[in-house]
Length: 91
Image (cartoon, rainbow, N blue to C red; front, side, top):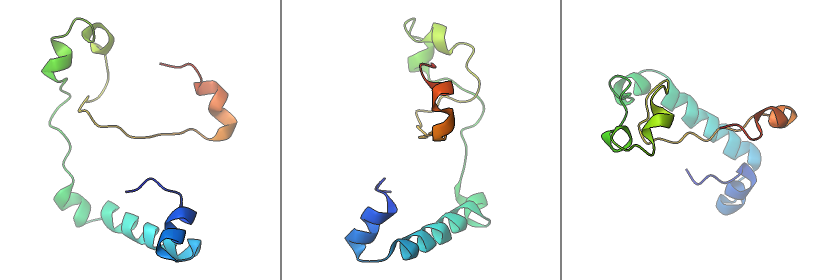
């Protein structure tokens, strides 16, 4: 939740990196498997674009042919270091 590396979290809670990693993976596994995932995770219905974007001529030309849902969510993704140059200056 904090976005901090394991060593900072470990230092904050006075635990080893191994302990932090082990518990992180336990929680991640719990959240990503049944029954929790199937009961509590719901995706937006359909591929809808918010009216704020759809009715704005400044944004709509760029999002008209977008694939997937634009639901104001942000998922941080970072490619491995050896392919960074492939993704540089991409829109």
